[in-house]
Every structure is written in structure tokens, then in C-alpha cells.
Image (cartoon, rainbow, N blue to C red):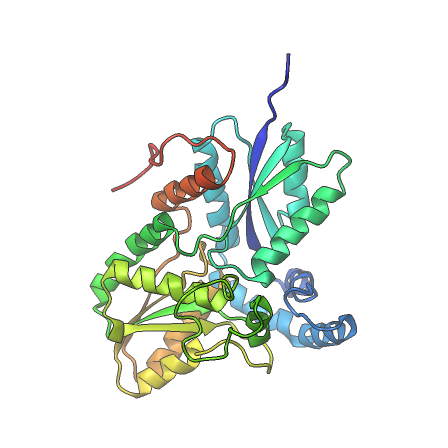
Length: 355
């Protein structure tokens, strides 16, 4: 009798420290910042820079994490585990695991659990809507490196970025619609995680397109098909159209920059302060670069951005939650898996789906 190969699903997110304590934040930051796809400098330059950052950053980051930490732990980890639970419930017989690129549960441990479950083929789903080498590239590289250490190397399939997937856009719009309707905003900020400009330039396969003109991200073609910034603009347009937000109220911007090198613009904190000073009173903000609420959404946008907004003349800034483990997102994720892998997925609406 011929054995049918068993397939498992690995969902990957970026990661979280084990606690807000600087003793836990420090190794997490070191692993993250020493990744050559995150800080793409010569090894010795990266080592010097990271060790300078680690003098003060673990304490400051720990204080930021403490503001969002729950009794049950990291919001990112909690939402990710709930997503895994819901996806697994819809895929009977298919082992589903969570792996974090940095921190725990690690990608290596997730691969081990899948192999222990008898999996021969692994479908890898990086939970980053828009492609970047720092996130998607790094996570996939880590999977391949860890899988290569196994004596029996499994077959691996990968899920592509889903920045323009209709189900993903619909899930984000459904999450945002009640917040935006209640806020009646004068501006809606689509804030994406930033990247150094050099990362965008390096993604340009032609070497002649990215950041060479003001409208380089207006469309996606052969030259900029890996461009994170262009994919962010595409997501924002699709989402704004779905929400019926007029073009004069839409603002695409980029947050979370680090260091003095130029990052992709406009910067979220700067443009929001400018608008508040100019008299904008009501606004909403969402970050469709993240599928799960985390430090960058809950603390950077939900706390610091709100404080800055109010301090410079704004009166109301509403944060749209991420799609987390929303049933619409579960439906969309499973549909993406169905269309891009060999995992059999029956239907797109589960028993837990809500109207």
C-alpha cells in the first residue's frame, strides 16, 4: 500500500519577546537587529550599531511593551495562537503550527512539531501582506535554513504576499468600517511599517525604477513587482475604495523608522502632526501591514500617536484594530491557502463565521 504524503501548514509572524522585562527584550532585539536582511550592513558595522542600540533600547522597548502586555501575555502571540486554533479547526487532519521569525515559538520548534506529526510536506504562510526582504525574505530564508538541518528534509511550498487579495481587503474593510463610521474622520491614515529607502531600491529588479519619480508606486509592473512601498500603496487604494473614503481624505504614510538613514516617506508621525497643527480635528488610523495587533499598532499608534495628535491640536484619533483572528480573515486565509497550495480546503465559511 502506498502511503499518502501528509501536509502541514506553518503560519509565520515576526515575533515578540517573552516578557516586557529588559532581560527578555534584549535577546529578542539582538536576534532581530543582527539579521542581515533587517540591517543590511557589513557584519562588523552591524555588530557595532546593534551593540550601541542595545545600551538603552531594551529598557525603552520594555516600557513600551509593558503598556500593551496583558495578563495572558503578548497581544501578538495571543492573536496569532487564536488564528492558528481557528485555522486548524477548519483543516481537520492537517497539522497547523505557529512559528515566529524572532523569539518564541521559534520556526525551528514549529518545524520539529510538524515533523513529529508525520508531515512530509510543509506549506509556509508568512503573515505579511506586502513583500519585503526584511520580513518575508528573512522568514523564508530561516525556514529553508532550519529545514536543511533535518536529516529528512521536507518538501516546502510557500504562499506569496497577499496585499491585493480580495478576501484580505474585505476582512480589513469590515474591521475598519464601524470605527470609521463612528469617527466621521476628516483624514484617514493608512500607516504601514517603514523600510530604509535602500531596501526599496535593492528590490528594483531593473535598477532604474524605484524612487526615481514621484509616481513610481502608482502601478506595479515588472520592475517594481517586489517593491514593498508600491504594494503598500496598492493595499491602501483597494481598502480605501472598499470603504468609500474620498481621495482627499486618504493619507498613506510609514511608521517605525530606526536610525538616521532615509526611510520611505511620508513619515506617519510627521504628517499627522502637520495635519493636526493645520486644523484637522478628527481622524482614523489603521495599519494594514499588520494582520495582528502588536507593539507597532497598540503602543506606537494607539498610545503615542494619539498623544501627539492631541498635543498638537487634534481632538479625536481612532485606531482601527487589526484583523487578528477575525472570522473573515480566517476565511480569506484559507482561500489563499486553497488557491496557492496543495492543501485541500473545503468552502470558505466556517461555523464560527459572523455576519
